[in-house]
Length: 362
Image (cartoon, rainbow, N blue to C red; front, side, top):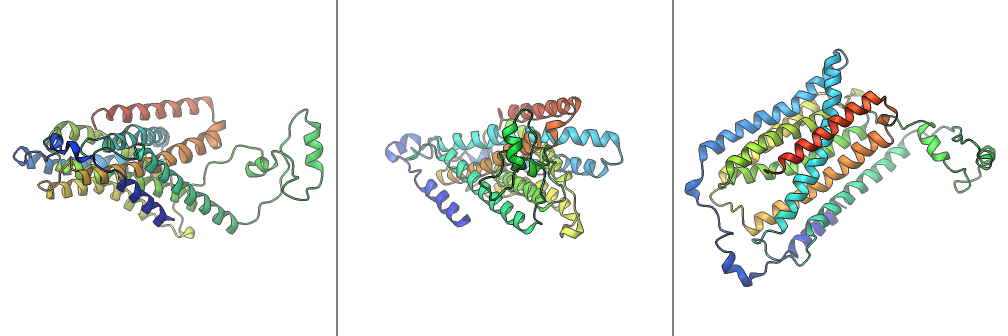
């Protein structure tokens, strides 16, 4: 399945043919920036500044998550950070990754695309691939689990036909009463919050981090090799990495690690460290290749556009399906108290606004 998806991605990149009729007119605008204007000292400093911003962002929620059971302040702050992070992740997908991929594929240095909606097509393919993996993984896990116990069908007032149907014997899946599956799945109550110790919960967070890592390595390389407009981009990326780290760290901190499930607690610190160092590593690579790296080159733009589109698809699926829908529509937030819902909504909208605003400068 992964091989098929990679082949499709390569095909989409190949069809982005350039129209070389106006190559001469675009030669100057697509040429590399002058190496004489490259500020090596500031680029080296950016490695350490973004290392600190990324580390603070991702480690802070995890540390707070460790202490949330014993400290009311940490518990409440972690709750706010959790939903602030949800807003960060969704805005990152829409206002950064997807927008950047559209701009990249529309860049005149790539040329005219034979297939114009290349960016959304790759993002759509990424979403479908992750959904298929999620779906068949859930089927496999369900078949390994113990069989469901019988439960009483959902009660509906003034629906004699439904009640009579629910009390009759069920011969096969096609004749069982309407809503019975819903009742059996949730016990006639909202579906409980996903078990933070389950393999599914850990898989969801690892999937989320993979999308962020794809994006982070590319923005690091681009920043390390950037010449024009470096200062503004650098300042924006400090907040970008901080907020993105808060979003990821809140999800890592919410996980429970059980030895019985083959999970080791040090893995969460490894996940945090991976996010912390990935962008600085990208910057170091960009510094090393800045003399040969052309930020307006066709090959570089295609690579950045494809990876941004893939990352956008991953984060869109994670943010909308695994975070918003699973936690709010069918999860424990559906019947939460008004105060709890209001606090979570405020945090969610603040996260959306903060990350969307940073998109103006990145």
